[in-house]
Length: 173
Image 1 (tube, rainbow, N blue to C red):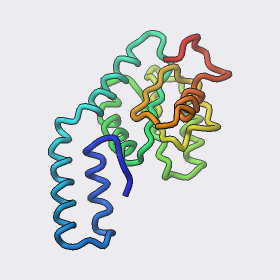
Image 2: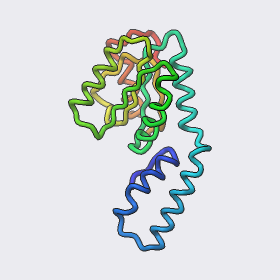
Image 3: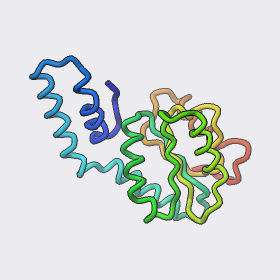
């Protein structure tokens, strides 16, 4: 079982794993009920809407070279990737969703495309904590933390992905 920072994505995770668990019929029914309640609240879910709104505000700024969105949880990543893809064309952005489940070569290719992005659209890259060390994302000068790690060092490592040698901007937001 994996935790999550967004109710609707946790509901999707519950649906995906409940058939794999050895549950009594009562427990299975209870988990189904919980999942349905979480999904009902998805329309009211403000976190993904707020993140999309923040991305929109960031890319509208004259100094925005790119945005990095960090999340810890895979279900949150999946939900945000889906929601951002829906609005990608409307927001004048190019989304690079670096799902940690894809192979290393594809991930490196996506990161290279993000770093060398030259189109009119603003590049936005969605990543998980798999990218907390050793990855250069200095194309971006804006960062959004979907969830904050308990360890402040992990936050510093995230910031270090964009605030490093090669950064063109004087200020990292």
